[in-house]
Amino acid sequence: VAMPSSARPTMVGADPIAAPLTHVALLLCALAPTVAVVDPNAQIVAVSTLSVVAGAYRSVRPASEGSGEVMTKEDAQKFPLLGSCVLFGAFLAFKFLPKNVLDVCATAYFGMLGVVAMSAILTPVVHKFAFGGRELVSYELFSVPEMKWVNDERWTVECTLAEAAAGVAALAGTAAYVRSRHWLANNALGMSFALQGIEYLTIDSVQIGSILLAGLFVYDVFWVFCTPVMVSVARSFDAPIKLLFPRVAASAIEGADRPFSMLGLGDIVVPGLYVAMILRMDNARRAAALEPRKSLTRSASKKAATASRMVRDDGKTVTTYFPAVAFGYLVGIVTTIVVMNVFDAAQPALLYIVPGVLGATFIRAALAKEVGVTWNYCEGLEEAQAERDAAEAKTKSS
Image 1 (tube, one colour):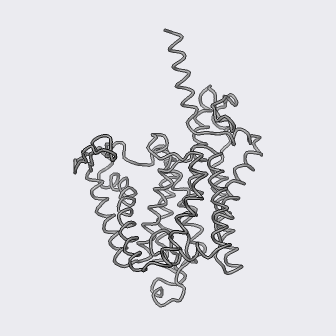
Image 2: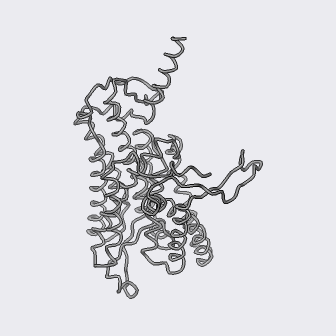
Image 3: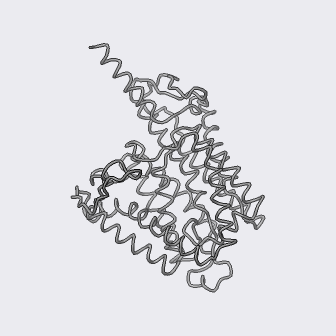
């Protein structure tokens, strides 16, 4: 379903300086190995951290508009189990089915997803620089009639000129990956998936984020340390589900025995969802500090909105968590790289990243004496309470 060009995904609502600079830095880091030999460990740290921060900035507007998919507590609890089923199923598929058939299916599936994801990433850029950011007319491409059990209403697919241009570029990039399997095309698709995942999949509370991270902490440790499944699938699955970082000069990749280091997209997206929620929490707290109204939290037992404290600050004394939690991610990924090189073995990155981001959250909360407030934070309850207050006031006045 199309939306008007004025509502296309942009970084409005994010930091007007830090957000675009983060994207530029990410692009430069991703392209650096094409012009010089870059230490793969340093590149893993830079690209993964910048991807998490960029994704967090991108999540601000979709979350405020309610256009993302919100993860519930039940979803967070089921996620490691569903992930385990998918992972083990992929392991069995590569063990018993012809690899060339699986590669064709994976290429078709991820190729279609890649065109969509890369188009979404490129559209705001094309809209701004090629069309000056002005409002564009949407042209109807086709419609899907109402069908029982499929859609409850008629779907219309529309496209602006910016989206069409971005789609052509995305199609060319995806075709380059399908044709050559070049590491740069793989990374372009992989980073598109990661950024879009963080942007549109939303965690709305610290509690749900903690449940998700704790579950996937156990998932990652089990499948990497206790079985050969995770490493086997990562090496066998020829699809952009991981980022590749050259160990040698670009001209020497074809003849190298181990030309790449790898990082799974899950090690970016999963903690990235939590970091993005922390950024939005900071934004909400700053906004609440400018208004003399109640900042609400959600009870851990009843999950009900309750008034935790009155926020009447001038906006300058509000405790912020995003820098600390982003730094926690950086410490976690650096620790992963150090341990991996010391023991010369694959490591479950979430083993180090999860304590990094959760530890940073609650250390910062303890220093600010806000552990309870932070633990009970739930995104959007302030707006819900404001609507209820307005409705009550209207009822009393009438």
